[in-house]
Length: 77
Image (cartoon, rainbow, N blue to C red):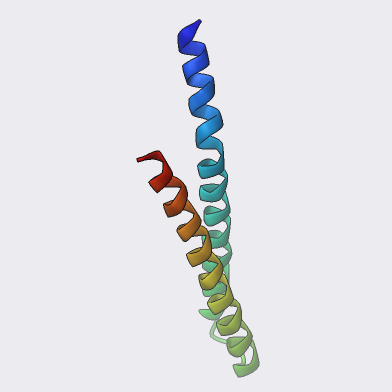
């Protein structure tokens, strides 16, 4: 019974970290899709500008999420 409680506590404690890793994964996938669009041979300069802005914003979001992951991980140590 103690093991179940320990496992449950670990899962509850890990959940905020897991959720942020999920968010980071989603943002990475979004960035990959944007990068793939940028590889198109027929992409116009306006679309390149839009993609660049979107990638920069996504990169900033990824930094924020990574900082949150780091802060949570440091609480565990």
